[in-house]
Image 1 (cartoon, rainbow, N blue to C red):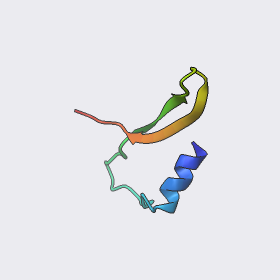
Image 2 (image 1 turned 90 degrees about the horizontal axis):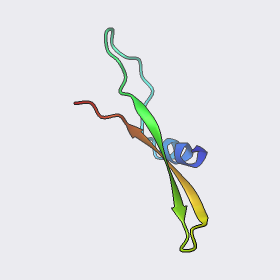
Image 3 (image 1 turned 30 degrees about the vertical axis):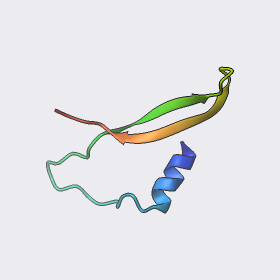
Image 4 (image 1 turned 60 degrees about the vertical axis):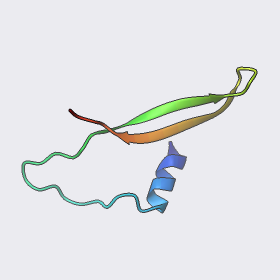
Length: 55
């Protein structure tokens, strides 16, 4: 998760700003995944920060 956050900051993915009155920020969540080797053991862990989608 720290690696993903560092990459997002390095690429200037977002700007911190104040929200207008009556507005809410888009929600987000972390998605985690394990990458496995052919023998089933864990090769590495991946984390991705994604925006929540609303219909």
